[in-house]
Image (spheres, rainbow, N blue to C red):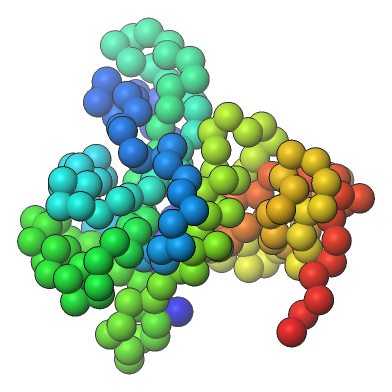
Length: 208
């Protein structure tokens, strides 16, 4: 996989109303449709507009969201739903790769889809199950959740596990330890998410 490191955004406390308001279809749709996904790095701050354009063209997008306390018009807005990062979006493979390339070519903003390798122009496809579990773990209503950059996630030592009991039952990932607590870590190209879990609920996965 080839993608330059996507940095986790530093949060600015002063934001506009448009940035605070949740955007339909950004982070709430989790579907068992069997379709793979692409990761797109953005070279513009127009994340909102790009998602709207792609959605209008029939592509489903996903942007991890989280609640933050922000200042707007000199007033504190608590629990505003906002993107975790602004230079990354995930695009579902609703069409063939050639058709997707044609649609993206019409977008008036620069973006780059993750490729299989530096010398391979084919798009890297995020497996459906991997993306589905990542979306579930990105639910902003879940507590004790942390986001990491791709590099940070790769530095986390842990054991591949599946969750056998509890609210995260059925999910898989890497069991890691942080601040004397255990977390289930799920990585996709460009970023990762981890949620607090009891290690007694996890079963080590057999490596093939």
